[in-house]
Image 1 (cartoon, each protein chain N blue to C red):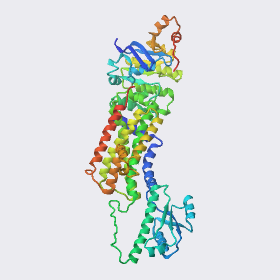
Image 2 (image 1 turned 90 degrees about the horizontal axis):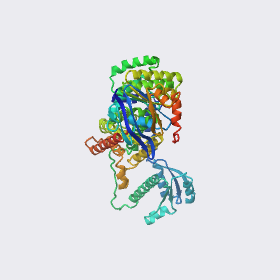
Image 3 (image 1 turned 90 degrees about the vertical axis):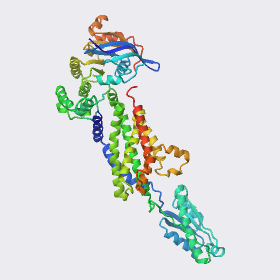
Image 4 (image 1 turned 120 degrees about the vertical axis):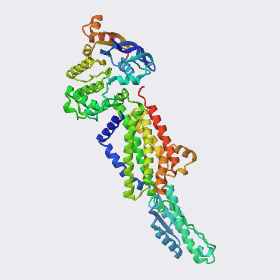
Length: 366
Length: 246
């Protein structure tokens, strides 16, 4: 019985005008485009310098700024007011204001100030820009200290050791997680819309008067999307490797095992929603509502651990959270399945709960 | 003869609205039973209860010897159903629809294949075997839907307004198919709006406002109401209706 139903699903998907193209294209487009959109590296920070000192020291600061690849000195203005106008017109991101007497103060008083004013409409960009500027200036000050004060105190230097993502490339962090999102969209939305579509067309009634049992019906919807999920994630692996040279540090089989389990969980969730939705409109809206929350609470864009505890509690009910964890661990750290057992149990828990719910909430009778 | 459908005091309420009001009737094996009534009289609701698609509020009924409350899944193995809304898969081919539903009812693969060819021949559909169902004309679709509904040789077939929107010639052919099914011993339970079709039934019941107001063979009904045809009987009874059309 099940075989006939699965055969039917594939025939329908194959004959659909849009679905097969979308299933194949979506992972490509999403993985090629989105990593550039979800970019938290700030380059080309537009700086306006107000140099009131015009001394050798202020020139050295400027040269140091120029040498930095993340910073571009776009303007050099005479007054702070003019510089501020540039910020207001969104032609610059940061003002570096060197006061007159900068050099003199530094030599005579061993102390001098530079003002950094940053546009923090985008808080993260603002604080990172300020940090860059601070680093450059303290670098300058360190050099001066070691040359002027020969009898200075012991110097302390911090040397960070970057683990797992040595080049600090955000793509290594985002690409594995984006694969999870693609899988969620395809394998969560499609089965839900499939069932609601059959309800609207009247096919469901014909199924409901037949002796198909509930578990068989749910499996007949689950298995096709499980297979599609495997195809989609494979395309994802391929794109990550071809376009970004990203391959898992750990075993690819670990990733496959987890993606199989995850697909069952997310398709099951779609099936649950479709059992409650009577129309396409309801289904679309419900899916968006849940998928938005699941994605944003999962730590895809923002670190999960920096959410407040109550939000983390809510987020821990998102299967995406666990699978994103797994993807990043396997891709970046090379974790194996034993190290990922907590995530494995969590995802298996989702599969059982969600699919039992899907079977129970599917009503052949009203 | 055995009664394959037994209905006793069946009632279905939706809130305060009584869709089916305490109806009782029996249908004999092999009979063509016409279930007549105006729109909103409660025909479809009653039929859906018998098919196990809806739960009754009160009353008892058995279909094919199985209780509708506790054995609805067993009933489903023994019935065929054709709904008002065309419910075959439009994006599947003719043979694929037949195969799918035959498979759902547990028929064997080679049995399906051989029976499909016989059926397509009978219907004169040999050329349409590979046509997508959505590309068939409505009358053909309805014939196919009926054929699929009885393909697994059920004890009873439920037809909900099967000839709605179909031209007179196709309707005629459709009724010939119903007769054939009945000859093979399949009990036919059919709702319709067309009173000429009622004349083809062995027995008809006429529902008004959720109640069965008359039930007999077409001949007896005409005599009872001193009418020339079933249409007249229906008009006499439907006048009593106080329910607005839904």
